[in-house]
Image 1 (cartoon, rainbow over the protein chains, first blue to last red):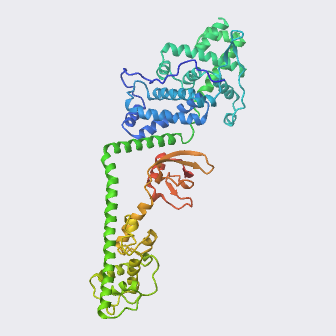
Image 2: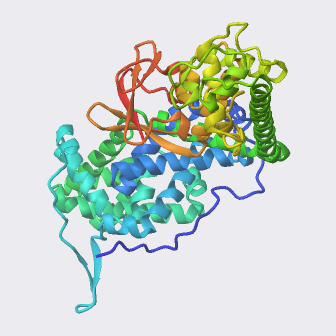
Image 3: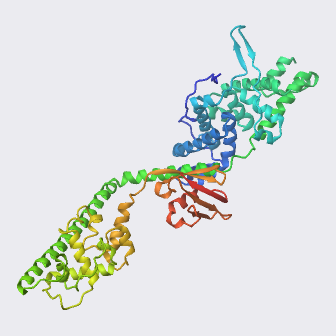
Length: 215
Length: 333
């Protein structure tokens, strides 16, 4: 069954114009230099954020090679857009927003849809007119997962893969990358209230998914 | 607190911070297990963030960034200096046409001289009342002040060394002004024969010149007929050097189309992709060897390992920019 996306996928600019004072953090000077054409400064930014971005994108897309390309694309888009980046948010939040957009575009692409076959655990049963929790897919763990030697990790990754992309992305941003609600709102381009309610729904979905695989 | 209230708190991430919720978890095994499971999941999720990114990710990103930067600057240059881009081919055409024209002119003049010499020889024969023993086609040669003809020269005048060709040129020049003095002033036979052969093969003197430098090269003025001939000849004929360069340039059209060159490990795993001009990439079906030392020094060799770094500075620069880790790689299209 094809993946379902309960939200409209729109390519949004992570930050609308109109805000204000640049957030001068550790990245800021590199951001300015890179915007002026300093490749070394941009390389420093890449080195600083590649791990965070790759782990996020890998879990969102579920395919290592896809993730590599997506991270590459996100950094390239950022490089092109750097001269227009005015620092309304941190570079980390900004690049995360770009990566999320890249992932969304890829997930709705026909190729990605064919490659992946995730489905929400909670489906509407039209016959009984109620929600049913589908059994979790139980693929043999790949060698990397085995190497990690963690059944918990394998179970968690299976549970994450079974979530909707919307829930997966907000959970990863919040729980894995430790982003604050405001940062999430900026990166995802939605209101703070939406972020809070979406996180609660995502946690609930993950908890329910974990109950099946992680007694 | 009810189990339902506890789970709502758990979803809001507040269960662990509220004493009443903790108390409920302590008394309800199901909710206690749910809290424990959730906290473990949170720890695992945070641990995922610490997993290293794949090696070469930075290198791959930066290779693309630099490639884009290069394309952008090239596009910028093309925009700024569009007139140069248009003028360059026109200049090339002009240079080729002028060289070809010059060669044609020289060939015509050379042929004319030989014809002139033949006429003079015939007139002298008539005047003196005797016929030369040499074959008619060699009389011109003899008129040029040469010794009696030797064994026929190779079919291409250019097979003679350039020095001989130069002498032949001198001999040809003498033929214009010389009276018939074939018995005096010993001249190098080979050179004289060369002129004769050239004249015989191209009676009009223009046949070889039509079509520009490449065709003009075998004329009397240009002893080198082919690139091999020109290269084989000692470089004491200044026009040969130009001919070699021109023949090389014409034989190898400039390759400037961008191609993707893949840097792979010995077992075929792709490391990165370099976007370079085709001239800076290995030929299709072949590969180059890349060795990156511990000090990140890069050696670029052909398939046999011969260092070709000096021949391909752009490739080396691209590899340095990509900064692959120490090791041995293959570069191929």
